[in-house]
Length: 471
Image (tube, rainbow, N blue to C red):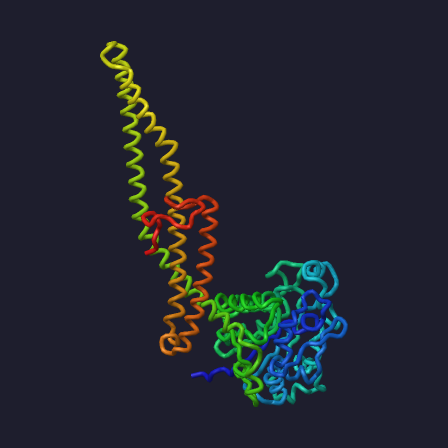
Protein backbone atom coordinates (compact mmCIF):
# COMPACT_ATOMS: atom_id res chain seq x y z
CA UNK A 1 0.00 0.00 0.00
CA UNK A 2 1.44 3.35 -1.06
CA UNK A 3 1.96 5.92 1.70
CA UNK A 4 -0.46 8.83 1.70
CA UNK A 5 0.75 11.96 -0.01
CA UNK A 6 1.71 14.78 2.35
CA UNK A 7 -0.86 17.52 2.80
CA UNK A 8 -0.56 20.58 0.60
CA UNK A 9 -1.98 23.97 1.54
CA UNK A 10 -2.82 26.85 -0.80
CA UNK A 11 -3.72 30.35 0.41
CA UNK A 12 -4.88 32.70 -2.36
CA UNK A 13 -5.15 36.40 -1.56
CA UNK A 14 -7.18 38.54 -3.93
CA UNK A 15 -6.54 42.25 -4.49
CA UNK A 16 -5.02 43.11 -1.10
CA UNK A 17 -3.85 46.42 -2.55
CA UNK A 18 -3.85 50.07 -1.54
CA UNK A 19 -6.39 51.18 -4.15
CA UNK A 20 -9.09 48.94 -2.68
CA UNK A 21 -8.43 49.79 0.99
CA UNK A 22 -6.62 53.11 1.41
CA UNK A 23 -7.08 55.20 -1.75
CA UNK A 24 -10.23 57.31 -1.39
CA UNK A 25 -9.82 58.63 -4.95
CA UNK A 26 -10.34 55.14 -6.38
CA UNK A 27 -13.92 54.32 -7.38
CA UNK A 28 -13.40 50.71 -6.26
CA UNK A 29 -12.25 51.72 -2.79
CA UNK A 30 -14.19 49.83 -0.12
CA UNK A 31 -16.46 51.68 2.33
CA UNK A 32 -15.27 52.35 5.87
CA UNK A 33 -17.27 49.45 7.30
CA UNK A 34 -15.60 46.91 5.02
CA UNK A 35 -12.09 48.32 5.57
CA UNK A 36 -12.61 48.37 9.34
CA UNK A 37 -13.74 44.75 9.24
CA UNK A 38 -10.38 43.59 7.86
CA UNK A 39 -7.92 46.24 9.10
CA UNK A 40 -9.14 47.31 12.55
CA UNK A 41 -9.36 45.37 15.79
CA UNK A 42 -13.03 45.40 16.75
CA UNK A 43 -12.11 45.31 20.47
CA UNK A 44 -9.76 48.30 20.39
CA UNK A 45 -12.39 50.93 19.60
CA UNK A 46 -10.10 52.56 17.03
CA UNK A 47 -11.58 54.38 14.05
CA UNK A 48 -10.31 54.97 10.56
CA UNK A 49 -8.50 58.25 9.96
CA UNK A 50 -7.81 60.05 6.72
CA UNK A 51 -5.06 62.35 5.57
CA UNK A 52 -5.91 64.07 2.34
CA UNK A 53 -7.38 61.43 0.07
CA UNK A 54 -5.91 58.42 1.86
CA UNK A 55 -6.84 56.33 4.85
CA UNK A 56 -3.99 55.93 7.34
CA UNK A 57 -3.39 53.32 10.03
CA UNK A 58 -0.53 53.08 12.47
CA UNK A 59 1.63 49.98 12.44
CA UNK A 60 0.33 49.02 15.90
CA UNK A 61 -3.30 49.25 14.74
CA UNK A 62 -2.59 47.27 11.61
CA UNK A 63 -0.78 44.50 13.47
CA UNK A 64 -3.80 43.98 15.71
CA UNK A 65 -6.18 43.70 12.75
CA UNK A 66 -7.84 40.37 11.86
CA UNK A 67 -6.09 40.27 8.48
CA UNK A 68 -2.60 40.85 9.94
CA UNK A 69 -3.16 38.33 12.74
CA UNK A 70 -4.30 35.69 10.30
CA UNK A 71 -1.38 36.28 7.93
CA UNK A 72 1.04 36.14 10.83
CA UNK A 73 -0.51 32.87 12.07
CA UNK A 74 -0.19 31.27 8.64
CA UNK A 75 2.50 32.93 6.54
CA UNK A 76 4.45 34.30 9.51
CA UNK A 77 4.50 30.96 11.30
CA UNK A 78 5.86 29.26 8.17
CA UNK A 79 8.58 31.88 7.93
CA UNK A 80 9.49 30.96 11.50
CA UNK A 81 9.66 27.31 10.44
CA UNK A 82 6.41 26.08 12.02
CA UNK A 83 3.32 24.42 10.56
CA UNK A 84 2.46 21.23 8.74
CA UNK A 85 3.22 20.55 5.11
CA UNK A 86 3.94 23.21 2.52
CA UNK A 87 1.95 26.43 2.30
CA UNK A 88 1.74 27.99 -1.16
CA UNK A 89 0.91 31.69 -0.81
CA UNK A 90 -0.53 33.01 -4.08
CA UNK A 91 -1.04 36.76 -4.18
CA UNK A 92 -3.28 37.80 -7.08
CA UNK A 93 -3.06 41.51 -7.82
CA UNK A 94 -4.97 43.69 -10.26
CA UNK A 95 -2.27 45.07 -12.54
CA UNK A 96 -3.10 47.29 -15.50
CA UNK A 97 -0.74 48.68 -18.10
CA UNK A 98 -2.27 51.69 -19.90
CA UNK A 99 -3.64 50.62 -23.26
CA UNK A 100 -6.79 49.63 -25.11
CA UNK A 101 -7.53 46.63 -22.90
CA UNK A 102 -7.23 48.70 -19.71
CA UNK A 103 -9.37 51.50 -21.16
CA UNK A 104 -12.35 49.15 -21.49
CA UNK A 105 -12.22 48.33 -17.76
CA UNK A 106 -11.32 51.87 -16.71
CA UNK A 107 -14.44 53.31 -18.35
CA UNK A 108 -16.61 50.95 -16.31
CA UNK A 109 -14.81 50.91 -12.94
CA UNK A 110 -12.63 54.01 -13.05
CA UNK A 111 -8.84 54.18 -12.88
CA UNK A 112 -7.40 51.59 -10.51
CA UNK A 113 -4.30 49.47 -9.89
CA UNK A 114 -2.19 50.97 -12.65
CA UNK A 115 1.16 49.21 -12.97
CA UNK A 116 3.99 50.37 -10.68
CA UNK A 117 1.84 52.86 -8.76
CA UNK A 118 1.22 53.12 -5.02
CA UNK A 119 -2.39 52.02 -5.53
CA UNK A 120 -1.34 48.74 -7.17
CA UNK A 121 1.18 47.89 -4.42
CA UNK A 122 0.45 45.53 -1.55
CA UNK A 123 -1.29 47.01 1.48
CA UNK A 124 0.96 49.41 3.33
CA UNK A 125 2.29 47.72 6.46
CA UNK A 126 1.57 44.15 5.33
CA UNK A 127 4.21 43.73 2.65
CA UNK A 128 6.41 41.58 4.91
CA UNK A 129 3.52 39.11 5.31
CA UNK A 130 2.27 39.19 1.73
CA UNK A 131 5.71 39.21 0.11
CA UNK A 132 8.19 37.76 2.64
CA UNK A 133 10.37 36.55 -0.23
CA UNK A 134 11.01 40.16 -1.25
CA UNK A 135 11.63 41.36 2.30
CA UNK A 136 13.91 38.51 3.41
CA UNK A 137 17.60 38.56 2.53
CA UNK A 138 18.84 36.31 -0.22
CA UNK A 139 18.56 32.69 0.76
CA UNK A 140 15.69 33.41 3.15
CA UNK A 141 13.46 30.80 1.56
CA UNK A 142 15.92 28.09 2.50
CA UNK A 143 15.70 29.14 6.16
CA UNK A 144 11.92 28.64 6.06
CA UNK A 145 12.58 24.91 6.02
CA UNK A 146 10.75 24.47 2.74
CA UNK A 147 7.42 25.17 4.44
CA UNK A 148 6.50 28.25 2.40
CA UNK A 149 6.37 29.02 -1.30
CA UNK A 150 5.37 32.54 -2.37
CA UNK A 151 3.89 33.24 -5.79
CA UNK A 152 3.01 36.67 -7.18
CA UNK A 153 0.41 36.80 -9.95
CA UNK A 154 -0.54 39.92 -11.88
CA UNK A 155 -3.95 39.95 -13.54
CA UNK A 156 -5.35 42.54 -15.95
CA UNK A 157 -8.85 41.03 -16.25
CA UNK A 158 -11.86 40.44 -14.02
CA UNK A 159 -11.53 36.70 -14.61
CA UNK A 160 -8.03 35.77 -13.51
CA UNK A 161 -7.96 32.56 -15.56
CA UNK A 162 -8.26 34.64 -18.72
CA UNK A 163 -4.88 35.54 -20.15
CA UNK A 164 -5.64 39.01 -21.42
CA UNK A 165 -8.56 41.41 -21.50
CA UNK A 166 -8.04 41.81 -25.19
CA UNK A 167 -8.76 38.19 -26.15
CA UNK A 168 -11.55 35.69 -25.59
CA UNK A 169 -11.31 33.38 -22.58
CA UNK A 170 -10.08 29.87 -23.12
CA UNK A 171 -8.06 30.71 -26.24
CA UNK A 172 -4.35 31.29 -26.64
CA UNK A 173 -1.82 30.88 -23.86
CA UNK A 174 -3.07 30.06 -20.34
CA UNK A 175 -2.92 32.86 -17.79
CA UNK A 176 -0.14 32.90 -15.17
CA UNK A 177 -2.66 31.89 -12.49
CA UNK A 178 -3.97 28.98 -14.57
CA UNK A 179 -0.42 27.77 -15.23
CA UNK A 180 0.45 27.95 -11.53
CA UNK A 181 -2.71 26.21 -10.30
CA UNK A 182 -2.40 23.54 -12.98
CA UNK A 183 0.92 22.55 -11.40
CA UNK A 184 -0.51 22.63 -7.85
CA UNK A 185 -4.05 21.29 -8.28
CA UNK A 186 -3.92 19.39 -11.54
CA UNK A 187 -1.91 16.41 -10.34
CA UNK A 188 -4.77 14.47 -8.78
CA UNK A 189 -4.04 15.49 -5.19
CA UNK A 190 -7.63 16.46 -4.55
CA UNK A 191 -7.81 14.66 -1.21
CA UNK A 192 -4.73 16.24 0.37
CA UNK A 193 -4.90 19.81 -0.94
CA UNK A 194 -6.59 22.53 1.13
CA UNK A 195 -7.40 25.76 -0.70
CA UNK A 196 -8.43 29.01 1.04
CA UNK A 197 -9.42 32.27 -0.69
CA UNK A 198 -9.44 35.66 1.05
CA UNK A 199 -9.56 39.23 -0.21
CA UNK A 200 -11.84 41.52 -2.22
CA UNK A 201 -14.19 42.06 -4.01
CA UNK A 202 -16.40 39.16 -2.85
CA UNK A 203 -19.07 39.53 -5.52
CA UNK A 204 -16.65 40.05 -8.43
CA UNK A 205 -13.04 38.94 -8.09
CA UNK A 206 -13.44 36.38 -5.31
CA UNK A 207 -16.57 34.80 -6.76
CA UNK A 208 -15.07 34.56 -10.25
CA UNK A 209 -11.86 33.09 -8.83
CA UNK A 210 -13.76 30.39 -6.95
CA UNK A 211 -15.86 29.70 -10.06
CA UNK A 212 -12.69 29.14 -12.08
CA UNK A 213 -11.17 26.84 -9.45
CA UNK A 214 -14.36 24.78 -9.13
CA UNK A 215 -14.77 24.46 -12.91
CA UNK A 216 -11.14 23.51 -13.64
CA UNK A 217 -10.07 21.37 -10.68
CA UNK A 218 -11.58 18.63 -8.56
CA UNK A 219 -10.71 20.19 -5.22
CA UNK A 220 -12.42 18.60 -2.24
CA UNK A 221 -11.30 21.13 0.38
CA UNK A 222 -12.23 24.59 -0.96
CA UNK A 223 -12.87 27.35 1.60
CA UNK A 224 -13.67 31.05 1.43
CA UNK A 225 -13.44 33.22 4.52
CA UNK A 226 -16.37 35.32 5.67
CA UNK A 227 -14.29 37.46 8.06
CA UNK A 228 -11.49 38.13 5.55
CA UNK A 229 -13.52 38.99 2.45
CA UNK A 230 -15.49 42.14 1.72
CA UNK A 231 -17.36 43.96 -1.01
CA UNK A 232 -18.78 47.38 -1.75
CA UNK A 233 -21.98 46.61 0.16
CA UNK A 234 -22.87 44.05 2.81
CA UNK A 235 -25.73 42.73 0.68
CA UNK A 236 -23.43 42.02 -2.28
CA UNK A 237 -20.90 40.39 0.03
CA UNK A 238 -23.45 38.06 1.64
CA UNK A 239 -25.17 37.23 -1.65
CA UNK A 240 -21.84 36.27 -3.21
CA UNK A 241 -20.94 34.03 -0.24
CA UNK A 242 -24.35 32.38 -0.49
CA UNK A 243 -23.70 31.67 -4.18
CA UNK A 244 -20.25 30.26 -3.40
CA UNK A 245 -21.69 27.96 -0.75
CA UNK A 246 -24.80 26.72 -2.56
CA UNK A 247 -23.67 26.65 -6.20
CA UNK A 248 -19.88 26.32 -6.05
CA UNK A 249 -19.98 24.04 -2.98
CA UNK A 250 -17.27 26.07 -1.26
CA UNK A 251 -17.25 26.06 2.52
CA UNK A 252 -17.74 29.47 4.13
CA UNK A 253 -15.55 29.63 7.24
CA UNK A 254 -15.74 32.43 9.80
CA UNK A 255 -13.33 31.68 12.67
CA UNK A 256 -9.76 32.82 12.06
CA UNK A 257 -8.15 30.20 14.30
CA UNK A 258 -10.18 27.48 12.57
CA UNK A 259 -9.09 28.86 9.19
CA UNK A 260 -5.42 28.88 10.22
CA UNK A 261 -5.61 25.27 11.40
CA UNK A 262 -7.26 24.34 8.13
CA UNK A 263 -4.08 25.58 6.43
CA UNK A 264 -1.85 23.44 8.64
CA UNK A 265 -0.86 26.18 11.10
CA UNK A 266 -1.00 26.00 14.86
CA UNK A 267 -1.84 29.41 16.27
CA UNK A 268 -0.09 30.03 19.57
CA UNK A 269 -2.76 32.40 20.88
CA UNK A 270 -6.21 31.27 19.83
CA UNK A 271 -7.90 33.96 21.90
CA UNK A 272 -6.36 36.82 19.96
CA UNK A 273 -6.82 35.12 16.62
CA UNK A 274 -10.30 33.69 16.97
CA UNK A 275 -12.17 36.99 17.14
CA UNK A 276 -12.58 38.97 13.95
CA UNK A 277 -15.67 40.90 13.01
CA UNK A 278 -19.18 39.60 13.63
CA UNK A 279 -20.09 36.38 11.89
CA UNK A 280 -22.16 38.09 9.21
CA UNK A 281 -22.73 35.10 6.96
CA UNK A 282 -23.77 32.81 9.80
CA UNK A 283 -26.60 35.18 10.64
CA UNK A 284 -27.45 35.58 6.97
CA UNK A 285 -27.65 31.80 6.45
CA UNK A 286 -29.90 31.47 9.50
CA UNK A 287 -32.10 34.26 8.16
CA UNK A 288 -32.37 32.55 4.76
CA UNK A 289 -33.35 29.25 6.39
CA UNK A 290 -35.99 30.93 8.56
CA UNK A 291 -37.35 32.83 5.59
CA UNK A 292 -37.53 29.70 3.47
CA UNK A 293 -39.29 27.84 6.30
CA UNK A 294 -41.92 30.55 6.70
CA UNK A 295 -42.51 30.97 2.98
CA UNK A 296 -42.65 27.23 2.30
CA UNK A 297 -45.28 26.75 5.02
CA UNK A 298 -47.24 29.74 3.72
CA UNK A 299 -47.09 28.36 0.17
CA UNK A 300 -48.31 24.95 1.34
CA UNK A 301 -51.27 26.51 3.15
CA UNK A 302 -52.14 28.61 0.09
CA UNK A 303 -52.21 25.47 -2.04
CA UNK A 304 -54.55 23.83 0.48
CA UNK A 305 -56.82 26.88 0.43
CA UNK A 306 -56.94 26.91 -3.36
CA UNK A 307 -57.97 23.25 -3.37
CA UNK A 308 -60.70 24.01 -0.82
CA UNK A 309 -62.03 26.99 -2.78
CA UNK A 310 -61.84 25.44 -6.25
CA UNK A 311 -65.00 23.35 -5.67
CA UNK A 312 -66.79 26.39 -4.29
CA UNK A 313 -65.86 28.41 -7.36
CA UNK A 314 -66.91 25.58 -9.67
CA UNK A 315 -70.33 25.37 -8.04
CA UNK A 316 -70.75 29.13 -8.22
CA UNK A 317 -69.88 29.12 -11.93
CA UNK A 318 -72.34 26.26 -12.52
CA UNK A 319 -75.12 28.15 -10.70
CA UNK A 320 -74.47 31.38 -12.61
CA UNK A 321 -74.42 29.47 -15.88
CA UNK A 322 -77.68 27.66 -15.08
CA UNK A 323 -79.39 30.89 -14.02
CA UNK A 324 -78.25 32.68 -17.19
CA UNK A 325 -79.51 29.82 -19.37
CA UNK A 326 -82.85 29.78 -17.54
CA UNK A 327 -83.34 33.52 -17.90
CA UNK A 328 -82.37 33.44 -21.57
CA UNK A 329 -84.73 30.53 -22.25
CA UNK A 330 -87.60 32.16 -20.32
CA UNK A 331 -87.17 35.46 -22.10
CA UNK A 332 -87.03 33.76 -25.47
CA UNK A 333 -90.21 31.76 -24.72
CA UNK A 334 -92.07 34.89 -23.65
CA UNK A 335 -91.04 36.73 -26.79
CA UNK A 336 -92.05 33.81 -29.02
CA UNK A 337 -95.40 33.54 -27.21
CA UNK A 338 -96.01 37.24 -27.65
CA UNK A 339 -95.12 36.97 -31.33
CA UNK A 340 -97.45 34.00 -31.78
CA UNK A 341 -100.33 35.81 -30.07
CA UNK A 342 -99.74 38.86 -32.21
CA UNK A 343 -99.96 36.73 -35.37
CA UNK A 344 -103.17 35.13 -34.09
CA UNK A 345 -104.59 38.55 -33.34
CA UNK A 346 -103.81 39.68 -36.89
CA UNK A 347 -105.21 36.54 -38.53
CA UNK A 348 -108.24 36.29 -36.24
CA UNK A 349 -109.19 39.83 -35.21
CA UNK A 350 -111.12 40.03 -31.98
CA UNK A 351 -109.95 36.66 -30.65
CA UNK A 352 -106.80 38.00 -28.92
CA UNK A 353 -106.47 41.45 -27.50
CA UNK A 354 -103.33 43.55 -27.91
CA UNK A 355 -102.70 43.65 -24.16
CA UNK A 356 -101.54 40.03 -23.79
CA UNK A 357 -98.85 40.12 -26.53
CA UNK A 358 -97.66 43.49 -25.27
CA UNK A 359 -97.28 42.30 -21.68
CA UNK A 360 -95.58 39.04 -22.67
CA UNK A 361 -93.23 40.83 -25.07
CA UNK A 362 -92.30 43.36 -22.44
CA UNK A 363 -91.58 40.61 -19.92
CA UNK A 364 -89.47 38.62 -22.42
CA UNK A 365 -87.51 41.66 -23.53
CA UNK A 366 -87.01 42.65 -19.92
CA UNK A 367 -85.57 39.24 -19.05
CA UNK A 368 -83.09 39.36 -21.92
CA UNK A 369 -82.13 43.00 -21.28
CA UNK A 370 -81.69 42.22 -17.58
CA UNK A 371 -79.58 39.16 -18.43
CA UNK A 372 -77.19 40.92 -20.81
CA UNK A 373 -76.93 44.37 -19.28
CA UNK A 374 -77.65 44.18 -15.57
CA UNK A 375 -77.26 40.86 -13.79
CA UNK A 376 -74.16 39.49 -15.60
CA UNK A 377 -72.22 42.71 -15.05
CA UNK A 378 -73.16 42.81 -11.39
CA UNK A 379 -72.50 39.09 -11.01
CA UNK A 380 -69.06 39.42 -12.55
CA UNK A 381 -68.25 42.40 -10.32
CA UNK A 382 -69.46 40.55 -7.23
CA UNK A 383 -67.54 37.43 -8.18
CA UNK A 384 -64.33 39.36 -8.80
CA UNK A 385 -64.71 41.37 -5.60
CA UNK A 386 -65.44 38.37 -3.42
CA UNK A 387 -62.75 36.24 -5.03
CA UNK A 388 -60.16 39.02 -4.64
CA UNK A 389 -61.01 39.65 -0.99
CA UNK A 390 -61.29 35.95 -0.24
CA UNK A 391 -57.83 35.23 -1.63
CA UNK A 392 -56.34 38.21 0.20
CA UNK A 393 -57.80 36.98 3.50
CA UNK A 394 -56.48 33.46 2.89
CA UNK A 395 -53.03 34.71 1.96
CA UNK A 396 -52.91 36.95 5.02
CA UNK A 397 -54.06 34.08 7.23
CA UNK A 398 -51.47 31.68 5.83
CA UNK A 399 -48.66 34.17 6.50
CA UNK A 400 -49.94 34.87 10.02
CA UNK A 401 -50.15 31.18 10.83
CA UNK A 402 -46.63 30.63 9.43
CA UNK A 403 -45.25 33.44 11.60
CA UNK A 404 -47.13 32.15 14.64
CA UNK A 405 -45.72 28.64 14.15
CA UNK A 406 -42.22 30.08 13.72
CA UNK A 407 -42.37 32.03 17.00
CA UNK A 408 -44.50 29.80 19.20
CA UNK A 409 -43.20 26.32 18.38
CA UNK A 410 -39.48 26.95 18.87
CA UNK A 411 -37.72 24.96 21.57
CA UNK A 412 -36.92 28.06 23.61
CA UNK A 413 -40.49 29.35 23.40
CA UNK A 414 -41.88 26.01 24.53
CA UNK A 415 -39.48 25.48 27.44
CA UNK A 416 -38.41 28.90 28.67
CA UNK A 417 -40.98 31.51 29.63
CA UNK A 418 -38.68 34.50 29.22
CA UNK A 419 -37.77 33.49 25.68
CA UNK A 420 -41.43 32.68 24.99
CA UNK A 421 -42.47 36.16 26.12
CA UNK A 422 -39.99 37.77 23.76
CA UNK A 423 -41.16 35.56 20.93
CA UNK A 424 -44.77 36.46 21.70
CA UNK A 425 -43.96 40.17 21.74
CA UNK A 426 -42.22 39.88 18.39
CA UNK A 427 -45.17 37.95 16.98
CA UNK A 428 -47.64 40.55 18.29
CA UNK A 429 -45.71 43.36 16.61
CA UNK A 430 -45.55 41.46 13.32
CA UNK A 431 -49.26 40.59 13.37
CA UNK A 432 -50.10 44.20 14.15
CA UNK A 433 -48.08 45.28 11.15
CA UNK A 434 -49.86 42.72 8.95
CA UNK A 435 -53.25 43.98 10.18
CA UNK A 436 -52.27 47.52 9.19
CA UNK A 437 -51.24 46.28 5.74
CA UNK A 438 -54.54 44.40 5.36
CA UNK A 439 -56.54 47.47 6.40
CA UNK A 440 -54.70 49.66 3.91
CA UNK A 441 -55.23 47.12 1.13
CA UNK A 442 -58.95 46.76 1.79
CA UNK A 443 -59.43 50.50 1.97
CA UNK A 444 -57.70 50.84 -1.37
CA UNK A 445 -59.99 48.18 -2.85
CA UNK A 446 -63.02 50.08 -1.57
CA UNK A 447 -61.78 53.25 -3.27
CA UNK A 448 -61.58 51.30 -6.51
CA UNK A 449 -65.14 50.06 -6.04
CA UNK A 450 -64.12 46.44 -5.43
CA UNK A 451 -66.42 45.50 -2.54
CA UNK A 452 -68.53 42.42 -1.79
CA UNK A 453 -72.31 42.49 -2.05
CA UNK A 454 -74.01 44.38 0.73
CA UNK A 455 -71.04 46.71 1.35
CA UNK A 456 -70.89 50.09 -0.28
CA UNK A 457 -67.68 51.88 -1.20
CA UNK A 458 -67.97 54.14 1.81
CA UNK A 459 -69.15 51.68 4.45
CA UNK A 460 -67.00 49.69 6.81
CA UNK A 461 -69.33 46.70 7.40
CA UNK A 462 -70.91 44.12 5.15
CA UNK A 463 -73.72 41.68 5.74
CA UNK A 464 -72.47 38.53 7.39
CA UNK A 465 -73.97 36.25 4.78
CA UNK A 466 -71.92 37.89 2.02
CA UNK A 467 -68.64 38.43 3.80
CA UNK A 468 -65.95 35.86 2.88
CA UNK A 469 -64.68 34.01 5.89
CA UNK A 470 -61.23 32.45 6.26
CA UNK A 471 -61.34 28.78 7.16
